[in-house]
Amino acid sequence: MAALTDSETVERIVVFGEVLFDRFPDGCEVLGGAPFNVAWSLQALDAPPILVSRVGNDRLGKRILAAMKEWGMDLAGMQVDEHLSTGTVEVTLVGGEPRFDIFADRAYDAIDEELIAELPAGFVLYHGSLACRSPQSRAALESLIRRGPGSVFFDVNLRSPWWDEGRVHGLISTANEVKMNENELERLSPGARGRESRASDLLSRCGCDRLHLTRGAHGAITFTIRGGPCEVRPASETEIVDTVGAGDAFSSVLILGRVRDWPLETTLERAQEFAAAVVGLRGATTTDRIFYERFTKAWNS
Image (cartoon, rainbow, N blue to C red):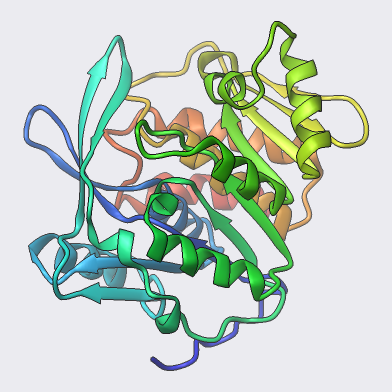
């Protein structure tokens, strides 16, 4: 595979993990997977990423590659598996909240570290936890971390039964920034303590700089290793179609804020604003460029 082309951006973003199709009860198929959603949004927000993932040599895999090409995304990090199928997830909505039935032994479980090309120096690495369920993709992620990225953003997505507590804690310890929801914080830092105490304990034990805690309709809080927490709340008039991908939208802007050196408060406000707009979509992404342009124009002005 050819070396990836560096860009003029000081910090290039590398996104690692699953790409798949979310299938809804009405038969609708929507491109998804937390890393893919983040990469898609970053591309639309004028921060083109390198997505390192794997699809099957099948109908869905070809649809993914075609969609990425049409969206202008870099395909150099994509791998094609001749044996395993492209990832799929059955999504059901219960009380407005998504539930996921994630199928095993898919192409993104076999990301090959030998096929990951040379990367720009000082890249920012984003990854989740689902692709780490398999030894092969986990080894590929570990090889990326050994390359010495400028910073690592770990987006915790605990999807039972596809996670291991010790492994997740290990990944937190290699990250500069970590994002999770309140239920995930309770699982990873249990005990009869308050939210801030749990977060502070996790920060001190794992050594990361920031812990971003998403709270659904209540917004989000960022805890830092130094200083007090920073909180943001959504507008009360937010229109919700479904909440699939809201956390991924939030993550994409957190990463954008890091590479563009925005103040934390500004980053959180913009992340919340973008996530609130995404819950008005069916699924986590759209091909409507005007949807994203309102944010890029406002943030670049």
